Length: 114
Image 1 (cartoon, rainbow, N blue to C red):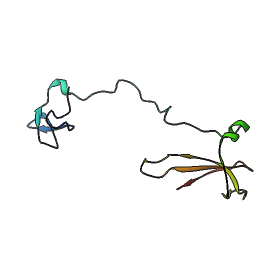
Image 2: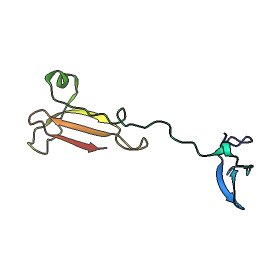
Image 3: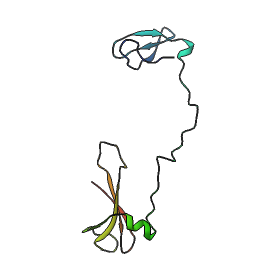
Image 4: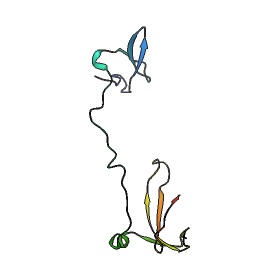
């Protein structure tokens, strides 16, 4: 079961022609009549997002000691000028990361897009 063009290696796309399904290479035009073995692949296991979606909790004193602090960042809730921060890629890879802050005084958390 191959969906790749044997000539150039591009992914072949299925097209209906005269009631039959034909695999066509969009790059070089190679054509192959579809056979029963060329049916669409099916997903064999359920995809979970447990590893991708991680939750960071900043709460204990030990955790607070290991997270860097920054001065000169004003808390929008209490006006304090010191906060813990960490950076995370929350959008596409070609966009800048998001910086998260947690006030050292009141514990308010906010984010800043760079």
